[in-house]
Figure 1 (tube, rainbow, N blue to C red):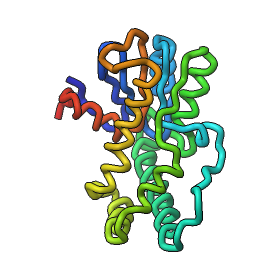
Figure 2: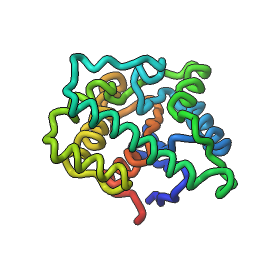
Figure 3: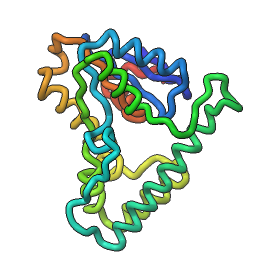
Length: 211
């Protein structure tokens, strides 16, 4: 069993040769040391990111979204950034000796470490354009509910969770399987580094989360 302690990395064995690490949007020095050690001991590193984000490129949306969707996307991103800021402040240097800065990116850090150590790197998240495309298909009522929940840090509607979490998590594992083979039959040691919400979902899916 694995216990979730808010503010700390969540680390567990998803399969014999695959560890999953749940991170926050900011890493303190302790986090970085743990992640660097895990990456060093792994043959491959899978990250919740995509090529555009790693290279800081603008992701084309593939067509002009409606004005309603432009408002929805821009507002959703603003609310999401606010939510990240609130979480970061809970573990800020002023309130927690572990200390988290407001402007770091955990996946870029992991990418640099893995690259410097010549590890195989897989970027296993949906491209942002595809994520927004899927969200754009939802009814207006669901989009508005999504904004309300995100603004208040409430649980997301089921349709939103299916896109933002469930489908993306399936995609992450499928991307690893494409290159390394079935998860339960991996011959090389790997680590999948994701946001804390995804990590909690993965832990719940194999019934190892200590409530």
